[in-house]
Amino acid sequence: MPSSKTPFLFTATQSVADQLGEMSSFLLANYTGLRELCWQVRGFQHAFPSVTVAEMKKKFLAGLPMPGGIDLKRTCIDTTWAEHERAFAKWLLFEVCSLYEGWAEKVCSDIFPSMRAEVNAKQLQFPASVRRNGTRTGYVVAVADANASRSTLIVQEFYPRLKAHPLNRWTKADEHLIAYRLFKECRNALIHSDGTTTQEVVDYHSRVMTLQSATPKPFRHLFTMPLPVLGQPIQLVLRDCILLGTVVHRLIVTFDAALSVSSRCESILANRLRAVVAADKSKWRLLPIDPIRHAQRLHRLLAAAKIPEPRNIVNVEVWMKATGVL
Image (cartoon, rainbow, N blue to C red; front, side, top):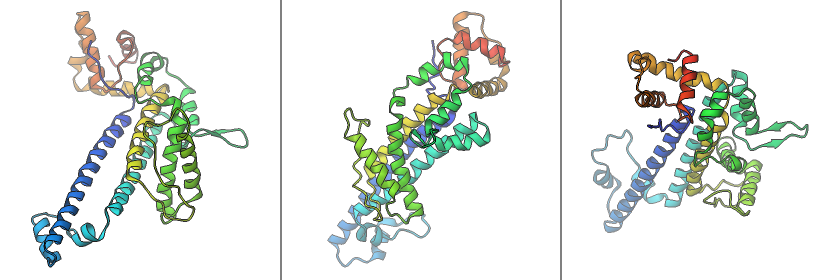
């Protein structure tokens, strides 16, 4: 039986997962290209010590339609490769954090009323904790809110496979969010504290290092960020920021499943299906009589609507007829 092959309930999850992959490829291409350019420029200057900057530009940049051009001397000769790596790390840090924030905002706006959506989008960016007055904070608040009104259809038909995704880290959600917070606090410090280490960075770094000293390890690959010193410049490590992308990927997979049980998600699925059916009513409303072909057509409908594979397609068909999709 064909499968829809869509591993997530929210389209934002697939979108961000794709963007994380594209970002990684883009970073690697630029990293490799800049390294090669620096090597070529330095080698050329070494071979011809009297060469001018204008001559280097003519050799390496001729024909490139780039406004303002590139300062080859500053970029390839005066700047160390370690400085370039820190710049790559900073760019990646900002992009990955922005992707996760955007994902949380989009998903929460889909399933919660506006006021709760804003609060829950922020809660999804923090590990679980308890305030002095006993109230809970962190991702558990958003997940509990989604579970306050559960969809029987989704819990029975879709959630088991969403939960079984190999990147789901529900049992390690706190650890992954602690790692995320370390880098989010680094980003905040770069924006608001002129790049100097804040107490929040120090605290979360300590928590991450403590986690990594435990057995078993919470992460497949360990972070190597140097010990931050309060008031001193933050020292980003490119490899760590690449691993941050992996952490965020696991978080969106984990919370895609955890939030999918909300009853409001039924409307999301129904609207996607209605849009597909409306585009070609004869194809989807006039289903084949043959049982095998009938089921195949239903599976293709789910695939076209980007709906995860259910446990029992018959139950989903009953639901689609009850809601007027078919």
